Image (cartoon, rainbow, N blue to C red; front, side, top):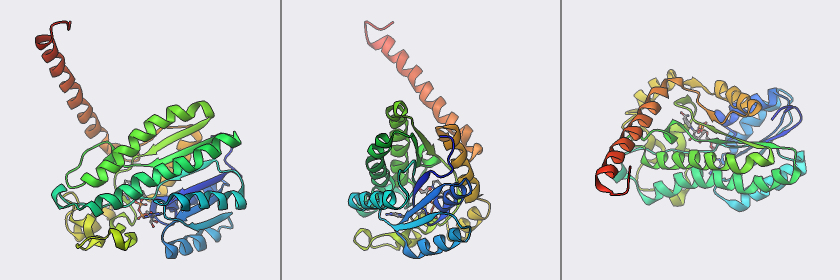
Length: 290
Ligand SMILES: NC(=O)c1ccc[n+]([C@@H]2O[C@H](COP(=O)([O-])OP(=O)(O)OC[C@H]3O[C@@H](n4cnc5c(N)ncnc54)[C@H](O)[C@@H]3O)[C@@H](O)[C@H]2O)c1
């Protein structure tokens, strides 16, 4: 998409972290911005912060797991600002720990926000973007955990691989309608993701201390390790600007952490080597193969 000034962006999880950074970057580019988030206090703080720059911004309290709430939010956005051109399906949460410690509530909560939330954004806004015919762009927030399986992140990994796969598919469906798609795949970014439990609904809360669940992940270790990890993590504002650049240039993958390239290539090499072994197997075991 070009000429973003005056266009409308809808950002889920927009009250904090990378979503809020996108709101800043889009506002600076002259867009009208809707931040949709489940956390009222964070919404109020974000609106106060963004409003100081005199930008056209509104906040909507929305739970992305609820289809009716997303529909209501889309209607409210259109009433206030008109046609929606950019949708960032960004709201996300995380739990960590070995797979045998995960409960159905862990699976339901994380898949509900990280995958159903993205599905609901696509379902709600695709017909609207097609109908106004002015073109548009979806940005779906996945993660490097959408490309690499990581120990103790089974639930999160599952949700993020799904978002990458969905994005690879819909980019093809939507291109003929002049609707671009990007999938955001960051490594560690300094946000409140490690405190995801703050937004966990009561009915999906298990017996454990959910606020610190992600801290139990084998990759992150104890809280002091998390603090050290966050101290050197990428600033969210950098990611906000990258997302804006990706929309303007219609760049599909957004890889904010180049240091993960070798790990992704190693995974591709393992897959390639496995193909070769199965090719050899087929040649010796299946009669009509070359
Ligand atoms: N921070 C990282 O290191 C990192 C790395 C890769 C991917 N991500 C992904 O980035 C996205 C943004 O997370 P962040 O890191 O900025 O964390 P964050 O916690 O700062 O922001 C997430 C936002 O999502 C909102 N949210 C949670 N549940 C919601 C719901 N049901 N409905 C609406 N909003 C809801 C929260 O209130 C919060 O404002 C997530 O999808 C996350 O999985 C984060």
